[in-house]
Image (cartoon, rainbow over all chains, first blue to last red):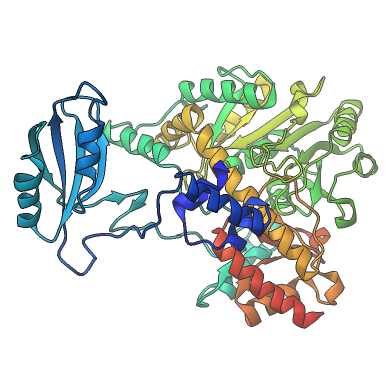
Length: 159
Length: 396
């Protein structure tokens, strides 16, 4: 059901009936497929994609580059999972290149993010260094352009 | 002073206003209309293609090009056409880049026709076919295709229309406004007629990438150009462009592929009227041909889903419609409601705020049907279908 995943990645709010119509399947088949995808961990969850500049409360995001000491058994996994468990961490990826983990941290203000990095993250055994990059402006998030949309400028009737 | 109206050339005066324009004026200014009346993709041009046009401007590519079009574009076109149609054209002298297929149509008839020469074409059809012929002092000879026959053009009807003044046959498959595709055996018979009566075939294949094959309409399908049939390349003017498949209507870019002598004659007119197509559009088109295929397929699949939605909803509401094989139009038959195409479209607009185009705007053969275009967002089509179902329910 690759097609189903593709549609849901763009719009997870479609009802099973609407999905069934788009895919040419029955509603029951679609519902069962979604349950399978949720159970086997293909679909991790659902959320609204929000433009933080328009969200009401204060909000700060940062990308932290983290360098780690790999371990004999499991490499970076144990430490990466440990970092990922913090509520402040919204995403955590192992990267190639000049650092090991890209950790996205969300907080109410700069101070909260800075405190998390200095008190929790950098003090962990195995963390060699961190570099914090605060996010200044969103142009595109999860496939959606922020700020400006494209209007339908077509004539209402044309040959 | 003589009234200005009397100074308009006779052949221009004879051309009626487009029925589309009349309907457009009724729709404009209404709020909350869902328009299924638009004859162009709802997608913006894919970003990588727009970016190529911007890059070309940034680099200062703002000059004229060769009259035929940039050689690099003509080479890409030759390569693309060979892949799609299985016909080889020489980029040096058999390909002409034009300002949309519209200009190419104008050129080909001006190049081919002497006053009084006849061109056979099939209706319902795109609104500019008849005027393009008339403006070249030709006589446009329409052949009716029928809803009962899925708007197939029958070779026997073509043959019956051939006279000693016939110079060309104009084809458009997949067809705007019906979405019809021509069965191969019928296309072969028409090719045989063209050869037997020594006629030129002008084939507008602008929708050829937008086919809905397989049982569920989701497969890409297969297009056969009449130019690829034996003995046809030397008598065919193949017209294609970027507007539909690549969603590039505003770039105004098309091309013709034709034997060198015809290309040269068309180029002469193009040279003294248009000079060349815009260079940034040409640069964008190179990018489209090199890297646009995945986006074309993404859009085609989106159209296919919407087509299936409309087919299903039409069937549920009891609106007869054949399953179109291509383009992005449905052409349902509304005769059973006892209204003319115009009445049906007008009342649907007034009562449910859904705009469709009356079939007679595409020639008298379109009377009894209406054109609903599915180049509109899926969720808007869903709402439009609910409204249409309510309207049809009241009529039944």
